[in-house]
Amino acid sequence: MKTKIIKIDTDNFVADDLNEAADILRNGGLVAFPTETVYGLGANAMDNEASKKIYKAKGRPSDNPLIVHIAHMEDMEVLVEEVPEMAYRLAEVFWPGPLTIILKKKESVPNETTGGLNTVAIRLPANRIARELISLSGVYVAAPSANISGKPSPTRAEHVINDLMGRIDMILDGGKATLGLESTIVDLSEGQPMILRPGCITQEMLENVIGPIEYDPAIVGKAPNRDIKPKAPGMKYRHYAPEGSLTIYSGEIHDVINAINSAAKQMCENGNRVGIISTEETKNYYHYGLVKTIGSRKDEASIAAGLYAILRDFDELHMEYIYTESFAENYFGQAIMNRLLKAAGYQLIQV
Ligand code: AMP
Ligand code: MG
Figure 1 (cartoon, rainbow, N blue to C red):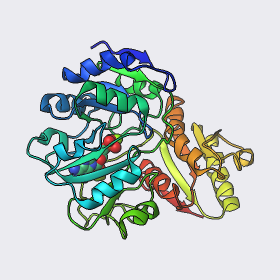
Figure 2: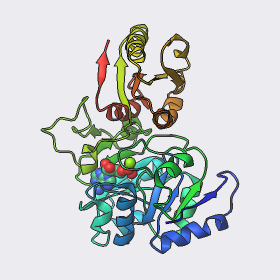
Figure 3: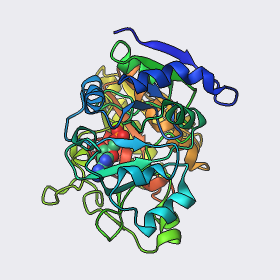
Figure 4: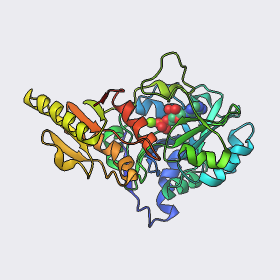
């Protein structure tokens, strides 16, 4: 398949620039497009054959459900049995934006889109290209991250090109995804609201709007607990992983730097290719391997935005061992550590 790439300037485009992409979606094809979280791989969510194409292009297990993207809040009512009061309140505060809400689906939403579940995940993205595209296409757009299943999510069009060139109809290049981490997922399908995936909209922000909200037990704690059955099958899969072996070092920062330096020294002396994920504040303290800076500790958003790109950069350089500092679990930190731990296969060394 030939994949067409179109550059779109987020700050300066007209709806007509998206006509061809909207046509593809309407006709059951696949279009990758930027969102404020990561790039999404879109297809008509109400067309089961189109949804199946997403799974095939990504190599995604068929029981891992897709998020349905909408352009108008009222569209929620077409997709779900009943919209609870709490869903309206969250949507009013956080949409458009990086929040996904799970509700009981209507019969008309295909099982292919929801991975066989009787619930559907819905989001109204903030990125203007994404919203215009959905609106113009006139369909609801199922869109998981636009990467090969298991790899770090794409935050730039180049990442999508690397993974999906020749496998999809079109890639809209709209520059960098500003946030860089997937949406916060909140399940409202069973009364008691639950966070299924942490993201840039934090527990505290949600509680300010709807009161107490718990984390799903399947995401609490370091490694997945085999006795707990995850709500969404997707939570059980290997995710965000670089090709090299990634290890997180946690503890007092000077001890972390020393431990990473000594591990890196040994691996380099053994002839391995070593990458180090540092911060603006610590980059000058590492003496072995290739040192890259993820962002600044003074600006957590920069670390969130840089995470997947740095993992992909190290893949391109075929690094065999990657060492990273850990990050405080406040505000965005919870989401950053959730992704980092999954990417590392839960290899964390406490120093
Ligand atoms: P991605 O868009 O690649 O980040 O993947 C979407 C993720 O959303 C899935 O892996 C699930 O964890 C979650 N999800 C989507 N739909 C549902 C649903 N109906 N119930 C629970 N989780 C869901
Ligand atoms: Mg994904």
